[in-house]
Length: 305
Image 1: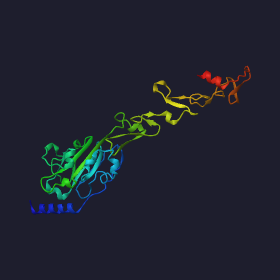
Image 2: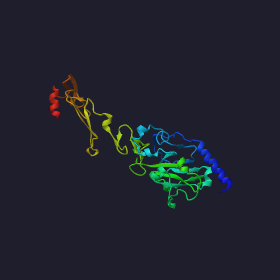
Image 3: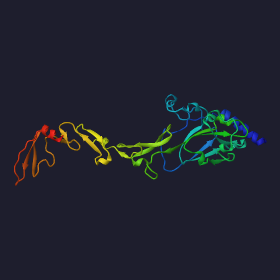
Image 4: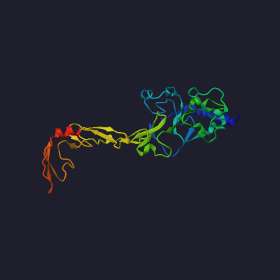
């Protein structure tokens, strides 16, 4: 080891000992799917973006509440702020210049190895980069498939920096918001969202719409039936999208017609006049026979059913 590299190691180790470097990670609880991929740069250093508690520091959450949602309680260890990406996003690693002399690389590990830090030799196909980290490196998209990935520091010499926080938990999510390729997200009637603990992006429908892709219009939610009538959704094949079940005294498509009262086209070739709340009178136009008929509401109602 040269004098220069030894000096760099001493300075780096001294910095790690006196600088906590811990932060409260800024993360949104709910994110919306972006139509365009986005590059993300992670600084590979234990001095700026390292959190020690998965809930209170990494996610800025109440552990007693979040612990019921997630099984990640064992991840309360020093680590770079966990990262959530959507499928297709790019990930770049920016290394600490003073670490170059360590011969550092990243390795894909299991969750257990992530928690305890890697201690055994690894196969070549577990290495994230084919060469040592120097400057800015892009992670191959092959390492960013759907699911949770665990990356940890692997070096040839120097202190075990994984224990100081050089490990990264990356969750990659896909969206399930399209009926078919090229179709609008959530049929244009909702938002494609994902909560922090969810594994995918799913549709959250606007008012009056439902279905996996917000493709169904809930006509009953618009309250088309009046006078306390009940509304029933019907099959699209029936021709009518809904049906109103009217209470006594009311009839018609939307239960707006009062039994025993004038309705459109009640009297042919004449005018209809309401006499009482229960009866009406037809006055015929000139040239037609004058017929006066009184309808009792309960009689009409019995005929309607």
